[in-house]
Image 1 (cartoon, one colour):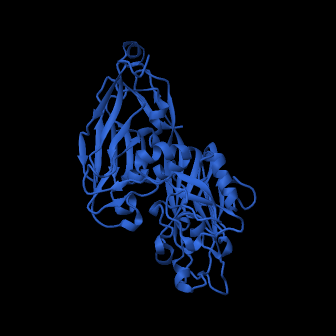
Image 2 (cartoon, rainbow, N blue to C red; image 1 turned 90 degrees about the horizontal axis):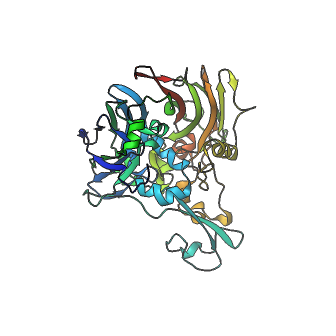
Length: 460
């Protein structure tokens, strides 16, 4: 097409054919049309009877439980636990994207800013907050300290639709099928529809310290670009394409029991650091070709681990670093990594950057564990909101290089730790808590066309 400012495109705002508040929404595209692969769901958001702010990682995406792109009853692609995957995607974008675009799309606070502050003189930190004079000269053996802070803006949630934050979602962020085709041709996919299922709960959507009030999903709409250029329509509309190959995101969950007195392994003064090694067979990827995988470590620790707003930065979307964590992957009877696997924090971080890109989990201290701050100051004094961000977004990722999975096994290990303040805090510690390991993987799929224009959706 000659120009985005020509008459080659028409922008349509499509209202849903079905919308059930806090439950489900569905759009249908008219047949015999040609659309670009730029499609966005707009007006995503919630109202809340008591004012609050959106989850700092996923923002309005926290309401989306499942998305599916279908042609009638044929599923082209679906994504379950979409809110979790969209949270992970915020890490895979660059910090520049999250600062300038991503945070404005979903109302989160993912972007991170860094600055260097001279501790010898009184000054206002770059984050804009007033400095605490009591810690003005502390926190470093040298004269300057690195100060980190999150993006200042955030998504406000209010009782009325005109005051609450409203975001948007590029469909290709969740459904890669859209990216794999140059045009969306509804003369081939005649009954194309987009379905979103919601799970509008406080834990999924709102900052964990504001878990009150009632939420209601706004009515979203779909924005598409129809191609009306005669030359493009003549050459593309109704033309059977070659096979379409794309990656879909599939997932699995396994659990790690906590260190506890009932299990006979609760850390204590005699055995302060018991180890735990567990092996899991993951069947969700059997007989499928898998590229990259990523694992998030969720824990449900309450009590001590959650006091004073500690470690609640991203709520249920936290992926906690564990003490002396070890990861090994065994594919079809062979280990992916030598010896004990990936058993150091920085080794795990480097692997994430290599496999998922340089932006993956690079925010300082988000991955791994941090030592105590110098000069007896707490890490909260040195790193803005340090207690909330240290070790809360620690992922393990690797690639299976498109191999067909016949048997996939994960070896997971960690070490418990005793708390000096007694058994109660040891039991409540996130490092000893029950865990759920959420595994997401890129699985190869294809749409294969026959001579009559019929097609099949198959795993490659």
